[in-house]
Image (cartoon, rainbow, N blue to C red; front, side):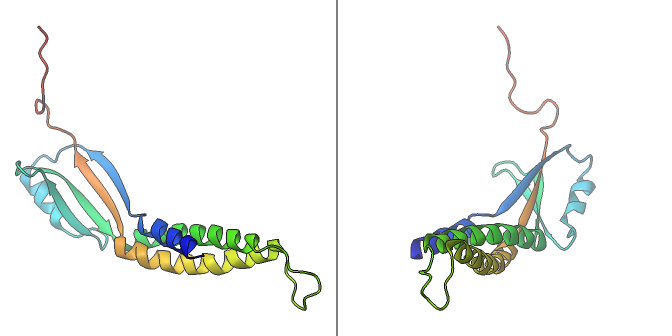
Length: 149
């Protein structure tokens, strides 16, 4: 039981979503300066190489898309874990007052653990957030060149 809980929490923590989009390089320094403005409530970070002061792209980090992604991951991971645990408990003997089949226990486990997983997923997803990374294509003539003999 503890191992299953640990695996469920680890799967939620491991899901930090980043989407990378290739872009054409902006034409002017003013275009790059305008990127520092917050976009849709997200924070903007300019990306640079360590040895090169030129901007190679930017990232926009937003909390709500991360929360929605965390909701789905948590809901699915929790429901699958709860269903597996509930089903593994097997059928109750028919002589008991409250007798449940393995399928009933799986359904109850999926609903309970899915709800808990969804709530935890929203919280973790909002903390991690969703990052859209925009990387500029190399400038024409820049980069390594190969010469034929």
